[in-house]
Image (tube, rainbow, N blue to C red):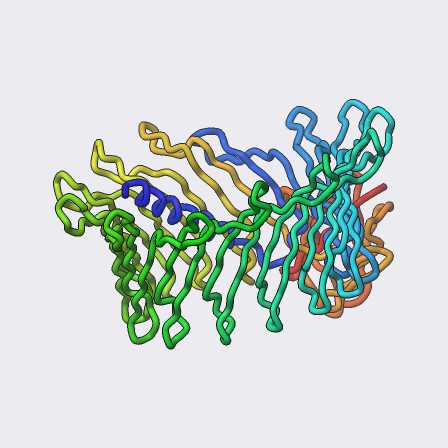
Length: 511
């Protein structure tokens, strides 16, 4: 049961990490700047950047990664990824290259080639790696997909390239079948046998659905190579109540390809508004042919239907009684956002709850996460010990513009020894071939190979020209109509941001 408790805690931590990844910039990110800090310092050191280039449809054309050379005060290329799209905006090629500093050239590493049907379904993908000996692309793997008339994937085929024969050889094949409601009913895997040059069955999943498309049965089979037939592995049965909420889960194991034996079962209960309030977990005892308790949980909610407490208990087979094992408490703000989550473990010797894990959150007035702190309980001094910390900064319009990550808490110095920062710059790139407008603002030529930029405005506006570190190089006022921004020789080749009345535009100087 302790293993189950650890698994539950692991799930909680993974769920938290997943939630962190959902904090992202809502705008189109054109540049990411990466910084690091010396232990205990608040002075950020520039390490690198990622520059994203888009086409007129806002599809990502290139991802360029560069590192900052502190000795020479210049940007140095490290790697880049380029995408090519067809006329339907399907990506048909991905090319990955790395920078050769000695040769000052881009070196091919790998590429993916994609093919699509008229419904934009990907029907083929070829992965190739660059052969540095022969300076050619060498085939590696190929995937071919087949779809039905409803665009359901019915066959997946993976092949690998053999240099000796110069042919594609089968590896894995997966087939799917569907019902009239496009529910997957059968999933089959097969593996290619090189000796017999035939497909060999592997596994098969069979799905059954109710008239309302609820999955009510899933049973798995494995191919028996000696008996030459499918044999039972296990079966899962799902029961639903009148509100389409799952009321029971039952797993059975196939024995001798003829009998289903119970394995484990979960019973669910709900309140009047369909919040899950109770779970009972049981395992089948083959010796007594009956169910035995293993675990149960109670869930409690506040007046806003937010989960405020969950208690897990395990069955003590020796005393035939329930024992506490895990408790999770949640605290919310007025906008129903979680501001604190505390996980406690039951001390079986002293018979009381002990702190284990705490997750604290803060939000701004727009309910966007601004602060997150993860702490673990230190049993030596009965205090919370910092583990990870994340802070988030937003622009006035709500876009995420910076994220700081901290870890490795120094208990003596009372600071995080590792501190990294990412800053996100969201702008629109206006180019000379396709002069795009943003609230009647036009900038050209861009890129510019001269000492000026033309800016056309409908209204008189303040402006700032900044480098990628945010340093203001030129500031002033643009008049209504045509304006010329002079770029002196201190404005060297590179990327800059022209901020006009709060809106930023990326401009490129290439003299």
